[in-house]
Image 1 (tube, rainbow, N blue to C red):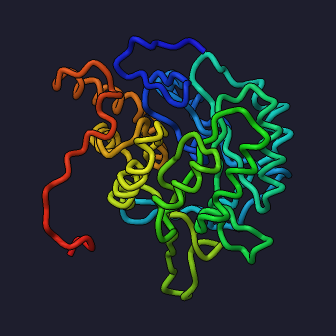
Image 2: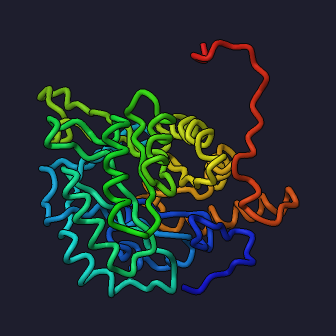
Length: 322
């Protein structure tokens, strides 16, 4: 692809040059074409696009309702609706313009074997990198999500690592006890980068019929409501990553340049934009300009100078934050 490495917005991510630190998140832009019909939208305003979660075979997804707006956020339980990896690789990838931006596949599965199958198919394609969605339920272990257990997380990463030379980005779940320990185990298993965080689990209830609004009963909460949690998780994972040179895509509630800058300062190399696109498809232009203005104001030559520059307060407060 055409890159502008001299741009102050350009970042190096696992040896790939992103024209900006902005990454459009999986599930929010379909397979890269979702917003190209919107006047004024351009994939060139992004550093990379994560394609929709892809499984071994086609999936219809969950029953409706699958999306519900909440205060400062959104619940979704799409259920990984997708046409299957063969169609994505054979029919969809050839239609994408790799000269505009980087494209990252999102690999999902219900078994280790499915993760291997999907990763192998993407390895033999033009995709730039592979994101591993370890928030999927392991059907062989009673439905426990791979990403909530460090042992299972490491097993998925190790299995995917064995069948691809492409960069692996592990998407970490916030719904676990120790996200930093999980990150450490995934690095040992071969992860090249992390996406922090996936959605928090939530519920909404119809009080008239006293039943969940989401057809799947529960869903993933995204949007500004989860930003403080996401920032802390990025900071925690960065403590593990910084000595290994492992980059992070920080994500969770980013809607403004200020939000993006917070994630960069907390330790992210790139930042993910998702829910904000639903109400402002052109938000990336505004965020990019805001970051440029900040760099100029602080006389900085590159956005990469911001990563991990958080200066913690010398507080004696209890670690619980009380």
